[in-house]
Length: 254
Ligand SMILES: Nc1ncnc2c1ncn2[C@@H]1O[C@H](COP(=O)(O)OP(=O)(O)OP(=O)(O)O)[C@@H](O)[C@H]1O
Image 1 (cartoon, protein in one colour):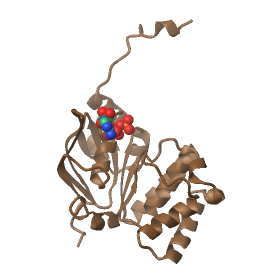
Image 2 (cartoon, rainbow, N blue to C red):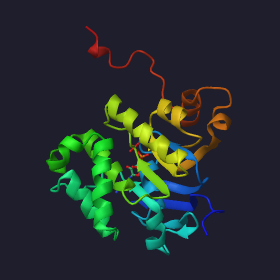
Image 3 (cartoon, rainbow, N blue to C red):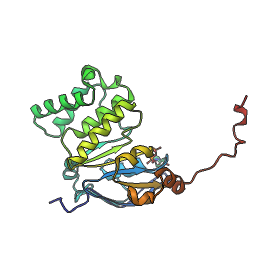
């Protein structure tokens, strides 16, 4: 039974790299059926947190559960429920998009006929149909995002975890991805994605967490976190940041 569990539950997740604390003890509950945005500035620890949450990076401390399945104790059960689009992880890029999808489907033990049918549909919906015979290594950055999303969706996961899905994606493709994710969430799936883009999170998400310096600074529904202000105002207040005095870079002025 997974019905009563959060889609994703993180407790005390922590990671250090060579003495630098990347993630300093993250607790988070992502309700099943929510559309969850993980916001944070560069270096906040978003990728590290999501990688530990989905079983790609072993935490120094803490635990992660997907719909009640322990990601680190029972990775196979957890990964069956998960679709993941990591950031910066190399795809097997000497394959065409269609071959990459077939490879992913067969690795997951799916029926080849189902893989073929879903792969064709995903390539078509993501406007990658014409690129079906192009090697992924020759795809643009945005096309790589889209084939990564197709790989994450292929087995019909219950929970989708996407690292920066809108980065390097043109507005038309971004709208396409938004549409697919909205339909997926409307069908009962849970989406959690990291982003720097306030408008996307504000437009799509039911919930948001703001991460800075490896800890969660704000968490809740979008309305609760905003508290009547814009998300950008809250983000800047939480994250801080230096204000230019106007004297810097004067050598750039003609
Ligand atoms: N493999 C690694 N080795 C050493 N340091 C790392 C490694 N991965 C991440 N870090 C450090 O951990 C911190 C958090 O990085 P992380 O990539 O999780 O942040 P992020 O919020 O995803 O950033 P961005 O928005 O820029 O992608 C940073 O200080 C980064 O330099």
